[in-house]
Amino acid sequence: MRRAVIKEFERLGEVLSNYNAVFAFRLKNLCVKAEEVSLLPVEVLVEGELQKLENCTTISKKDEYSFMIFPIYDEDMPSLAQGLMRVHPEFKQKIESMTVEGVDINGHLEDTEVRYLLVTMPDVDDDRYDVLKDGVKLCYEECKAQMDAANMKADAKFATLTVGDSDEDLERLKEGREKLTEQWNGQRDKVYEDKLQEIEDAHNKWLSEKAEREQKREEEKAARGESVVSQMKMTPNDEEMTN
Image (tube, rainbow, N blue to C red):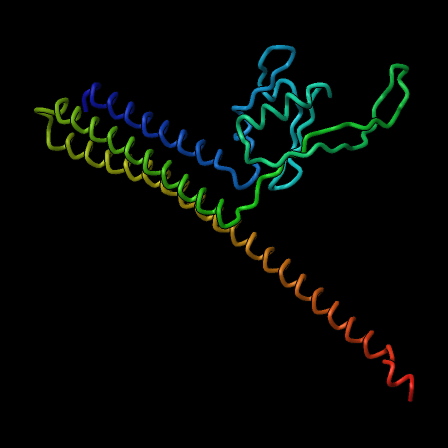
């Protein structure tokens, strides 16, 4: 194949790859679990200047659904909370503290209380379940439309660039196009299906926990009722006392 055809083919691969990357990034910001990339857009106002979150904090995961974010300077805690709120108002925030072993100015070991921001992903309840699924579907449809448009544009260019090419070269281009389409459409669809499954699993988790809470309340209610009945039986009424 001619150089111009190969360059156009490589350009198309890069475009489709970029669309997939943006799509995956957008889905990770529709948070179900604690995704590190969801924190990338967060900026914190420090001494009048906006700083990237990673430049003014230390971040670690507490579990699948929560981050522990330690400001380098405790005085930045309010700005940290506000920065997170601006980007992800749905995240639950709570200031907690932990004891760490440090060294004082004289080199002696000492225990220090360190505050951090516990950031927890919200439950996927019925309302959020619908919002997340709608958001994921919208992102998918936008990505698909962008990729379809890129493919159509590239195919139009290929048609111009391959005028007069041999049947062998045309067949090679056709096979390459099919593989490229299969690769990036497949990648996009896998990201989409994986996210839908993640949402489904989180929603089922919420439903299960909700059912457990309701069952526990019913059991406690029944236990209180049995206790009242038992006390009534144990307490003699006035007629019994007279007899």
